[in-house]
Length: 394
Ligand SMILES: *Cc1c(COP(=O)(O)O)cnc(C)c1O
Image (cartoon, helix red, strand yellow):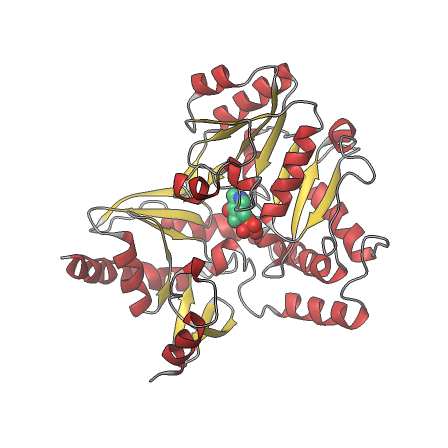
């Protein structure tokens, strides 16, 4: 019996089974590589679902966390700390947020969405327009905005007042947004739907409609933000300035942290002293990690790097690939007649970690630091992987 199968047996006897059986028991990571408990190495093209922006064990992140742990890990929001203030300032700067903007730190993406929901309620309205294909989290508030019925229906009734419209359908959006709408919430690139980009024109329409009806425009950049597309935030190239933005995943490079960013003093002032809170959110350890991630992305020109290496995935002329989607290092490979779970397994057997984001598509969200050579090694192996997956599917 391998160490991995022994541990998976213990897992099955000790965990709530919501994640099914994990694929591997991983022990450590270094750069874009992870190693399992049996010593097998894999090229990590998923990075913990767009979380490990700097890969694993990046010295800048490791040192920042170690140094901060020695100074203070947690202080509570009765107090504050320089890392929290500095990270808030840095986020507002890269978001090009106007004066009067603000940051509320959380521990996860879901909590950032919850904060956005409470912010929206403060408009005095309760209707929320969300998109089909959306994923915004699993709490009973965030889940109400998450479109997938299998996630939502076992837990209904959820937060009322949510209306789903087909993503990208301009007329449906026009019809749905009115003066009773508290907020329109959207992912500029829908991650869990299989990496589906919204057109910049659609984002601009959402901005127009929310402005004219007095609703908030909330962009969920939890997966597509923090440099993943080659911009700091995916909505930025549309020129749209949202009212609020949610962040998490890549922000801490693996240390749990999320954030709600509010744009301008009118929106920032909607949440008053005492109206929201968190015990752990904004702790100096997580904020020091966030600062290390943002500083490294800037210092190492990773936004440019993401565009350059990401271009390797633009058009794949590979047997078994029907199409590719996404930009930068947030990509999906739509397969032609090959089940994505079989392709994921074949990739793993060949030493590559990818994710079957839908039954027919693989998702690639590698660390932003991945090299062209590392990505090329996957592309070189892809025909064989897909061939093996085809055979397994028969
Ligand atoms: C992952 C994700 C969330 C939820 O974040 P958690 O940290 O898992 O709570 C919300 N929205 C989007 C777009 C996500 O990708």
